[in-house]
Image 1 (cartoon, rainbow, N blue to C red):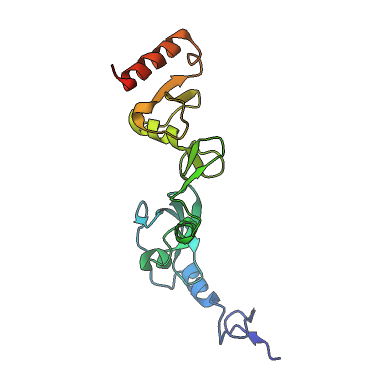
Image 2: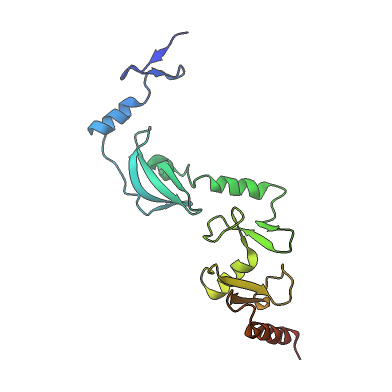
Length: 196
């Protein structure tokens, strides 16, 4: 079987390739012969990716960019793939689309068997259990307008663990959740919910 060698660097190349292993493009970039048509993509959004910095040259001669995905992963992408739209995420978007098409996909909600509802939230800073967050904690975060601290506990007033209505949730800290004031607040809240 005949071996093909690159016409520029004499490196053995794939037998399907005709002449070059793309070293000439890289070489021309390295010595400055390729036209410098670099676009500044810093802080520009491409789907779920935000371009952070140039880290080198891609094999196709375009710039290689370090990007941050909305899910928190970093991914290196050529500027040509960013600009033509062929790369929109680190791969998490494809997984989400596959999950959404699956007959077992329940919209990102699962029940853990103890009555609590977990919600798929891979980019959440307080995620546990892989890429999931307890739904009642997400609801309380929306009410207070910030992420909850680890010492904060969300309680269900009616005792039903999957009833995550805002009026059924109360936020307490570990320090005061067993005190009389907490019990008294719960009793008042239950009376208010039950009505006269």
